[in-house]
Image (cartoon, rainbow, N blue to C red):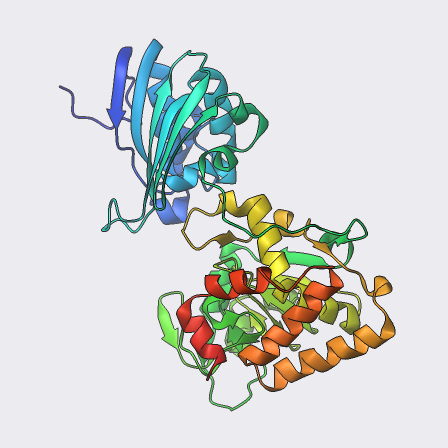
Length: 408
C-alpha cells in the first residue's frame, strides 16, 4: 500500500483501476491550486488538465496511462464530464485509447451531500468495442448503443437519454438567430467586478438595477419583488453603485457599462424552459445571463415573442438537451442558441407586426398567464405550428412556482 498524492506520483503498470477522482476545479481561484502545481499538472496531463476543467479529467488520463492494454478502469465521476467543453480533448482521446463499455447516470441523489450529478464509467484500455451499455437512474432507462456513435456524436448526445418532446417541423424559410441578432455573455471575472459594487437600492427606480439569473422568468423579471443572491449576498433591490465601480477601475467600468445600454433581451442559462425578458437601457445583466441585441426595436420584439414560444424550447432541447448536466433541462449556450430557427421581420405581414406589438405591450403591462399565452400562440402561428401539444407540453414543464407567479 502506498499513501501519496496520486496526481504527482508515477503509478506502476496495473490491470485494474477503481477510483473516485477529486471533484475539484482545475482553475486557480476555484480549485485552490497554486501556479506551480498547475504548471506541473499541465505538463504531466496535457490532455486531461485543461483550463476550467474538473481535476477528475487529469486523474482519468493518469489512470489510462498506467493501465495495461486489455486492462479496465472503473470511476465515479461528475456527470458534467460528458459534456463540458474543457473535457472534449479527453473524451476524444478516450474514444481512441480507452473507450467506455458502460456508463451509468446516477443522478443527483446518489451523493446528496455533494450536490452534484454523478456517473460511473467503465473504460476498456486498448479495446475495440461494438456496443456500450447505458443506464440512467433518474429517470430510469437502460439502452445498448453502437460504440461507433462516440465517433459520430458528442458523448453526451449518445449517453444522456433523449428528451420527450412533441413533434414539430421547422419551416424552410426560417433563418438562424445569428443572422438576426448579436448574442454575448460576460466572463466570470466580470461577475465579481460588478458584485463588489452592488448595494441595496435606496431609490424606487435606480439608474442601474441589477438582474441575476434567478430574477429572470419567461416574459418578465422580478427585480424588487423577489430576493436575489449575488456572490453570496442576498438583495431585495440590487443596484450597481457606479462611483464604487469607477473607483476600482474606471476604464473597465466604462467599457462594461457600455454593454448595458440600449433595449435588449436577457436570457437565463439553466432552466426548465427558455427564460428571457426584455430590459431597458441601464439595467445591468449579471453574469452568466446572455444578452441579445437586434438592429431595430421591431426585430427585437419579434425575436422576443419567438423565444417565449414553446417551439424555441422544444427545438433547443431536441438539439442540445444532452448538454444539460444539472437536471434543469435547458443548458443555454451561445454557440448553440445562435442556430435557433426564427422568422425575420421581412417575412411578417404589417398587420401581424401590429398585433404582435399589441400583445407584447399587454404582457409588459400585466405579465400574467393569459398575456404570455397570447404571445406564445401568435409566435407558434408565425412558425406554422399548431398550438397543441406544444403549449400543453411547455406549461407542464414550467415549475409550479413559476406558474403560480403568472397567476398572482
